Image: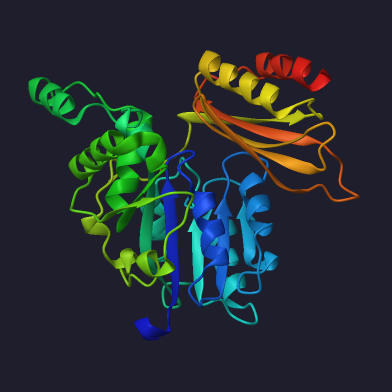
Length: 349
């Protein structure tokens, strides 16, 4: 089977809250003439991202073309989840023209690229490109990597000291595998923040990468689809901190899912989540809530202490108005009892 007959797959990676779901929502509605399918790999037990994307379904990407894999990192469950899912999507009638894979914000992309060499699928699909999303404000603030010059100086002075954090390694691995970087939320970073983020990305990337500023996920599909990178055949040019390591895990992070009864107002919930993020060093909060007197569901997204919320759809008539929140933090930082106790008063009103 020739390369031209292979089904192209785009891997969309990026740190927590970088805007992957927003980007895919936009691509679903503006696919550039392609019939899309989407695979969502969630971190946590509640399918928030998949639920959002199914709500964006259109004829060129119907709800049945959106598949969630919530049993763990797809590069760790290749045989059980990933391969059967890809094979099922290829059997759809009509067949998708292009598959988008949204990785977990904690995913290491290179092991996923290696999965495309499995005999069952390597002759049928190809990685058209790896798209890395980077939150401009967060990168400029140095949340994912320390100051490049300072780290280089420290390493030169003492090679025995490891100055990397798990967060920075994830960020750097995502950049290393990328074919193009989308710098998201440039309005929040401002011109100076965007310039600083670009400098950091240029310094951390192993090779020059195109960087495109993107607001609210809006980007022409021609910019990021149809790259023809065949990334699965180009692994040596995509170095990873974990090269040579036989397997990887996500023990540096943990997540919990907490139910959220109906809340009296959106602003009060947002203020509470901002406080909890600061007090408990929470990296990411995502989920949805029912607000008293409001017929629409409230979607909640938080990166660190920056909380955003919006009403995304009507509650169905037969749907229980119960919310859920996923909290993600570095290992041993989450206190489920304390978070549950903190949510109780706001839910009670």
